[in-house]
Figure 1: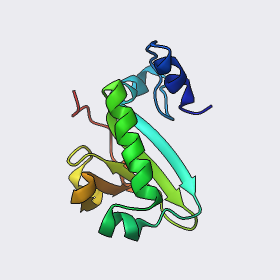
Figure 2 (figure 1 turned 135 degrees about the vertical axis):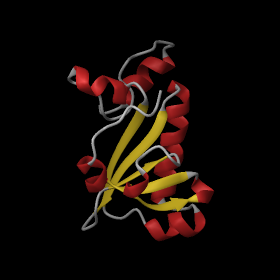
Figure 3 (figure 1 turned 90 degrees about the horizontal axis):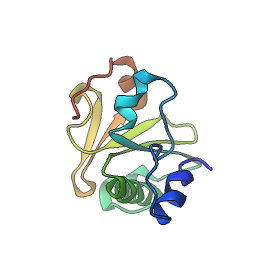
Length: 129
């Protein structure tokens, strides 16, 4: 059911600790998972050009949905996405991830785009309160 558990409980007026597609399975991950609503997508094509130039297409739709769902739970949105034969990218609000991991800023979508491989190479810091 992926992240659907939180949606089902939210419609019933119940609050759950797990929201999005990623949850902590060890204490070390709790800080991250209590601050970020993470949505994961792997699709044939998300048409990054349409997203960057016009804020349209599948990637734009995934990002808008992620932002909306994160706001419901008062979390920071993070979209981890990959299209076939492409690198894994991470969309997040501006200035949330390490600046040297960001490959572009998409101002009209209010997000930074980073490479997942660069983010994994960095130690996690508790910058977000």
